[in-house]
Length: 202
Image 1: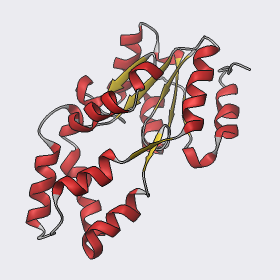
Image 2 (image 1 turned 90 degrees about the horizontal axis):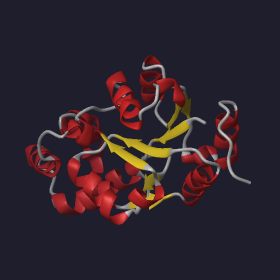
Image 3 (image 1 turned 135 degrees about the vertical axis):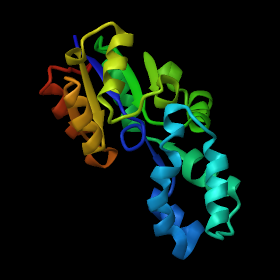
C-alpha cells in the first residue's frame, strides 16, 4: 500500500489573509520588490543554515522599510490557517492504512512553530522538514532521503504539492507526484490519488 507525502503550504495550510495581500498591506509600494528578494533570503535557511528572522531584519533595514520585523514575520510566517478538509484527508488516508507524512521546505524558526503549535506531529506518521534534513525540494535528494527514512522505494510514495517545480523534482527522483492546491478542493485530490491506487477510508 503506497505511502503519501503531503506538502504544507498550499496543501495543508495557507497564510491567513493571503501571502501577497498581507505583504502589500504591510510593505506598501515595497512589497513586490521585497517579495522577489525572499527566495535568496531564505534559501540557505531552508537547509538549516543561518537565522532567517535576522536575515529578514537586515533586508528590511537595507531597503528602509519601516516595518517591525516581528510584526512582518508573525503576519507572513506564523499566521497559519490549517485547512480542515486537508486535515480530514490525512485522517481518512491513515484510517485506510496508508502511511501519511509531511514533506515541507521550512526554515528552523517556522518549523519549530509548526511542530509546537499546529499538531502535525500527532496528525502525521512522520514530518520531514527541509531544515532538519539539510535538503530542500525540488532537489531529488530530498525525496530520496524521505523514502530512505521510511524504508521504502521512492516509487512507493505518492507526493502531493502545489508547486509544479517540486512535482518535477519528485518525478526526477522516481516518486509519483501530483500537483494540487487547497483551492482545487477535496474532490479533486481524491480523484488524483485514486488514479495512483491510493484509497481513502469510507
